[in-house]
Length: 152
Image (cartoon, rainbow, N blue to C red; front, side):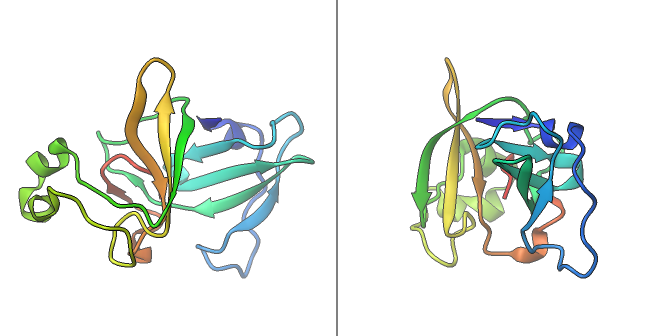
């Protein structure tokens, strides 16, 4: 289950001193947060993957720009390694100079903006939301609102 905010509300420990901002780290959670969930806290650019024993892996991420990020409850409908990518028609309309060249798609690989792995987010009754949790080929964007609705 993918949700938003529950890990933050449950009392996540502060970052440990000396760690790089992008290094994943295991952090304690309050009891009662189920294992096997992903929680995104967009205002802190954090993703929590909950583990047993009231712990979670914390990842610093980037999120969608204002007006493009969509919160809610989702489930992972697909997982892909080196995913291909095609910008949505809305992305092309917003920034044709950036996305028009990829209207027919881009094969997976190191130059692909989705990075090496992607989780495809679906909702009951809606199917594919076109939202993704994915890697990035530009780590300088971590900790910023830069993408077109995804978290990565």
